[in-house]
Amino acid sequence: MQGKSPLKVVDIKGTKVAAAICYDYDFPYLAKGYGAIGADMVILPSSDWRGIDPLHTEMAAFRAVEQGHSILRSTRFGLSAGITPYGEMVSQMSSFDNNDKIMYSQLPTKGVTTLFSVIQDSFVYLCIGFLLSFMLIASRSIHKLKPVKKDQLS
Image 1: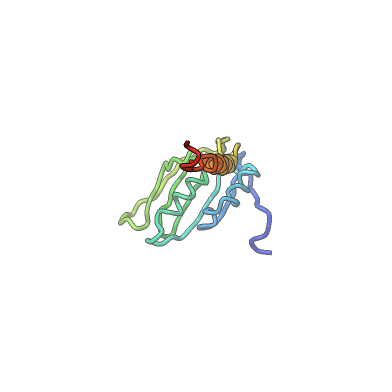
Image 2 (image 1 turned 90 degrees about the horizontal axis):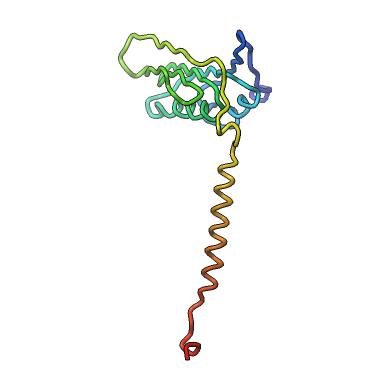
């Protein structure tokens, strides 16, 4: 069934290359899946429009950092970019600029282990746990500070 098949990487001269399309890479589960199978580079063709440019390219950069792989994002309309596993856009070119240029990008061909790829969503859960603990402590201390009645002062 379309859209339900397992994610795959293709080995090209020792580099595990994967592909996704358009704004699908805004969704963390897809990037996480490619990170889990060890993709070194993701090719990401797209077609944006003026109203969302450069949002999807910036999201792709975020996914590159999360999973530690390079991304080559080419667009028919929008911001094309070569993104390293550290989120650095080593090359970029917008189709909305008036130019007759060709974007050239030299990207790392091996993925890296990033902090996020190790801890995953643990930081989010720790923050939620801290917030709930803080709220519990705060509510207990409010209940302990009951107002003193005038009769109790004498």
